[in-house]
Image (cartoon, rainbow, N blue to C red; front, side, top):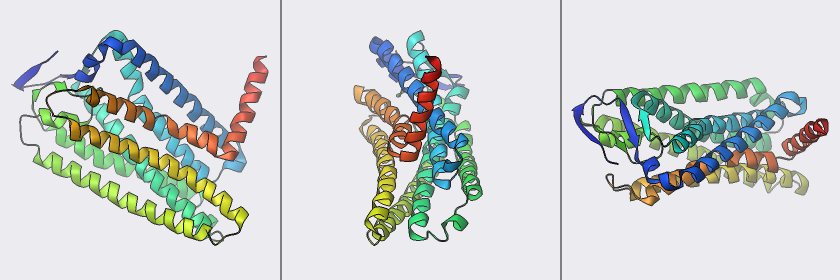
Length: 315
């Protein structure tokens, strides 16, 4: 299926990735629903136990909640529509819907990066300044920072969306299974230099600044841990490794997507163009709740306890 327009008003786009995987669409739809359901369950359990257990009312667990709820936000922006489209055989998305999905996925991505940055700083303060930690990082401060992350990223992404709104389009075929601004821009008839410059500058600034802060905090925390007693060091390192594991998966996912665009010809859709976004988004929007639910001892114990209570009542 190949459609193109020339200097006309576009009201819908065609997600060519969905067209390419029609032959095994039902399998992908089932996987999408399974990932969505699993992530929803794990996120709900983590948020519930953190909300109900007073012992978990600490900055670290609040930040974990923010992280997994953001993952759920990204998951909900992508997988339900993907499953519905695959089951119904629809590959059309409205212009408004495309911009909304682009906004949500980009917001999810950058909030994730900034939250990992705050989590790294939180662990650095907890290990490096234990006596001042509860003054420097209170629950109230953590909530305010989390809100500021969402507001800041929402504003800068809205600007990107507004820059996209000024464009007219000469094509409607998006070489992807979902909408994102980077996929829409090549279809524009008019000059996209400002859009590309803004998007690239924003991405580099966010990524490099956050990565530098995270690396500094992790390195400093490890150095401090080496000077602590064996028991204290082991506990701190375990928590730190959980954060590093989750962050590493996020970075690999970002590289997956970048790798996808470097391979893409821009006009010809290949199987790689479809598989990489599917794998990348699938991993990114499902593993964090699992990692923190299993590796964080306090959360794991509370989740298991609540599950026993739930299934006990069903018997």
